[in-house]
Length: 468
Image (cartoon, rainbow, N blue to C red):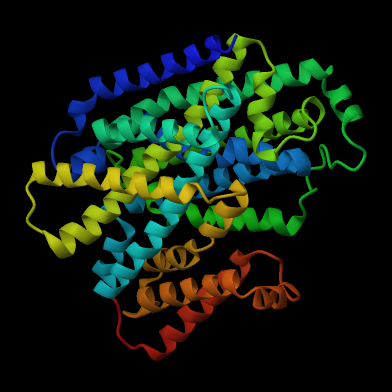
């Protein structure tokens, strides 16, 4: 009966391409039209675009993977994402939109230095590429579980790439936003149906609790530990203020009010998805003991009726497509706006900008696919990569709200030192082990200490005030 779910997934893909093709005219023009939707997104597109970006492989496959081992507490990941979105909507989204910039590194050059912009681009691209690569992993897990006789894990990753790269190449940011309305609806249909029916097959929540292995954390909301929960909130709130693909959504809103409303609504939509996915992961411990944790959610869904399985898996796959499309657009904006137009070809015409943007999307997609082949541990990889956003968030917020203490060297030195600190943490285990004796065992705490200390030192020794 595998032809039923795969047919539903194929119908979903066709629908995405129909929407993309019909709306492609909205992206005609130069870089602003293609990569920032002409700065004309209403709040009801901003919200699903943000939700689609947030609810990807980490929020569904990754949370279920962790819940398979750590229980319902894995759902705090999405709660942390929602908190970040809501805080941006309350504090920064309006200001971001009024800046009329295309990237955060552009903001750094405007106020600090060219070196700050270049270093900022490098770090942002690393972040974007790491997050994008995780969507291939989740997509491959979904399709290889859906049709194991047709898709290998790597073939599933490749098909996932072809779909979201095609949508992005044809329609740009407008297509990402409009197709994400479909994606978010499918995501909710998918995870809700999956959770309800999986728990029903076990016999209800009472039976789910009773049948869990004796040592399994189950529905203990604090099972992963308070320090890790705090680390997640700190990482995701920090990330929401400074990852290019997130803040670019506010840059693309039609006005400051649309940016703020879209982020607030998006945060509310994001909040429940993680806990629902965690319930599916919990169910998998009973329905499919002994499997690879990454396949906890897809395998559980596959055991449902063919039509339900098709709807759920289409929703799960939609999560990857929606996230990856926005990430690719954000990465291409960095390459085109901060590198090519700034240093190589500043006088590009609109048609040339659009061509270069599409080439950038394609090249970046190939590179991230190659990286994805070596990725393991979705949430762990993502959260370590996002720790790098501490310096970006600190510099950005200080520029917005306390510019009088900012100095010309802040962007350059805070970014460089935080990058070096993360490398020290990752490649010198003895140092990480030493720090963990006196602090929680996550690099985000270490990087915030390093970033703040660097900012203070630069403020003391650098007397050059920024351009306000």
